[in-house]
Length: 127
Image (cartoon, rainbow, N blue to C red; front, side, top):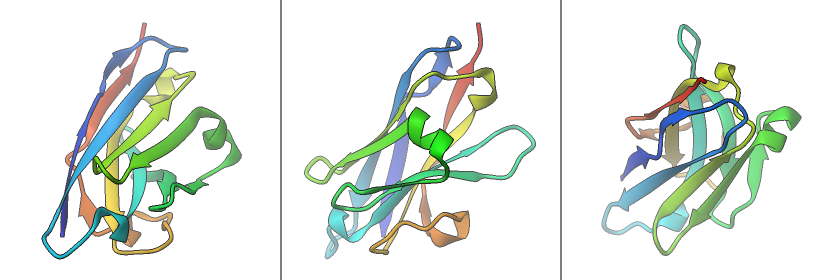
């Protein structure tokens, strides 16, 4: 089992950047490298959507080419921390952002592919 806590959300102006953090607490007998991590967001009135997943080696899988140009995920397996760098933010990027993990070697693209979830952090893009 792993527990996840997101932070770094807040208010940002359009065109700005923001970096979210996700700190993992891993159960005894497990290593953080056992888990794949995915970033999701849920915009108001919409379903939770996949943004980018990252393996323990740091390889990333993006939901689309447009997301590849705007978002980037990194992880540090010593500090048990994952980041989501967001650039060129737009008002439509306003959402609750979640990190999620699962005992998988490759990231899934559906929320059902992930068993463990953080509580989310609110990102609001507005002038």
